[in-house]
Amino acid sequence: MSKLLDNVVGELNRLPGVGRRTALRLAMHILKMEQEDVAAMTQSIDAFRNNICHCARCGNLSDSQICEICADPKRDSSTLCVVEQVADLMSIEKTRQYRGLYSVLGGVISPMQGIGPADLRIDLLLDRIAMGNVREVIIAISASVEGETTLFYLMNCLKRFENLKITTIARGIGFGDELEYVDEHTITQALVNRREVVKEL
Amino acid sequence: MSKLLDNVVGELNRLPGVGRRTALRLAMHILKMEQEDVAAMTQSIDAFRNNICHCARCGNLSDSQICEICADPKRDSSTLCVVEQVADLMSIEKTRQYRGLYSVLGGVISPMQGIGPADLRIDLLLDRIAMGNVREVIIAISASVEGETTLFYLMNCLKRFENLKITTIARGIGFGDELEYVDEHTITQALVNRREVVKEL
Image 1 (cartoon, chains in turn blue, brown):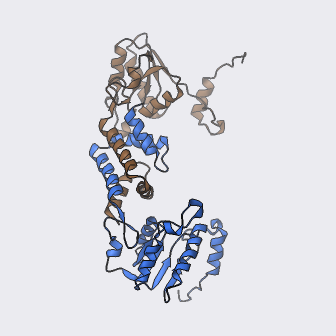
Image 2 (cartoon, each protein chain N blue to C red):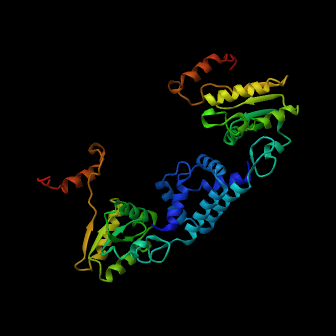
Image 3 (cartoon, rainbow over the protein chains, first blue to last red):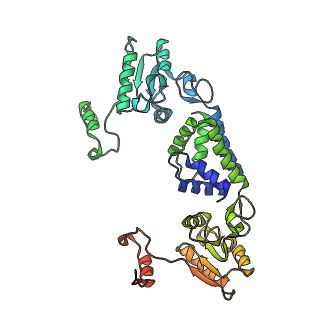
């Protein structure tokens, strides 16, 4: 087999979800692409890897020291939403409903994977709250065992701030979810947190 | 959103089978990779796209003008196997059972997709046979409408070579295929081409 092909298949094969067959298919696609389009792609990958940094205030991915969200004077700096990862922040941003700021932990506490509190950006969160402007912290981390551990740890860190409102996002049945297939824990939460229907509607 | 991230997601999103969500997941993985590993990957992509060529004799992908298979004196140059694409050649090579040479058409005739005989490497195949050494041509192209059209076209081109044996690969039930799920056409072919069981076995 051609060494050039072998190399590219081997390298693409290291990406998550890309087996040798998919790597070969990608290589064949790359072969059909214009040379400048391939160069644009590889340059964007290198530029991303070499130049992206984490926002010094919230941990979001950013081209500069402070991310666009933190630098935006129109955002409400009294509300902080704590998320696990940048992808979660992006999902919330897509709703266009949240106007506060974020704090991206960069993971959850997981003794199994050797991730402790010191591996997360908890100091960044605490420093920001200590500056005094924050009135509410919304904790939007996943409802897994690791997520609950992290929530517990955060609550312990945050209790020293008096007058700070701490909330978590609502658990319940998602739009389009069929009750038949929803797990018991979520249904229990949805029942416990049931809301009275407004009669005027 | 970060421009660097937006660029890389946009570029990866153009690859087949890579949606925006997968592109984002790949970008996050790239971020965790060592800088030199990312550079090795992008360099292998660029080197592949810019330097790979098609073997002047068979159309296989090759680092040099003549591919390793065609250049190998131990291969049987009296047998040519005609395949659609390089991936097919690689599948046959993996069996380690075939010791002849190849002719890679680079596709099949498909009026629907605007691919005519002139778009395929049929001349390369005919030139090679005209040199006189080839005694058998094995046509190993897919049994689709386009494949059958291509087979018909090839038969027409090849009939002028007397003493040239032309074969196609056997159609039948694959190992592990369940008869219940095999299409009627394949079952018909498998019945028509049934083989007597050797009693000594």
